[in-house]
Each structure stands twice: as structure tokens, then as C-alpha cells.
Image 1 (cartoon, rainbow, N blue to C red):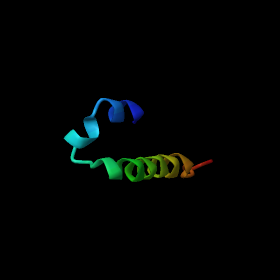
Image 2: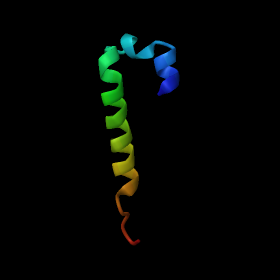
Image 3: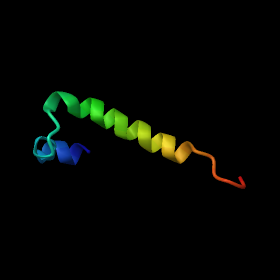
Length: 42
């Protein structure tokens, strides 16, 4: 994500500078929730 910030991708995607950190936290939270879900049979 830092690479995207450095290369200026977020403004092109409609994410304002003040929203980047909040959005990054949301992405990390979503990733952690996804890998933390137990699978069937384990």
C-alpha cells in the first residue's frame, strides 16, 4: 500500500489523502478477519 501512496495511485482511485490511513486500516482489518475464520474440519 505504501507503494501506491508514493506513486500517487490513491487520488486516481478517488481516495483523498486524508482517507488513506483509514482505508488502509480497514483493508488490514478485513484481511485479518478473513484469515482468522476457522475452516470446516479443523
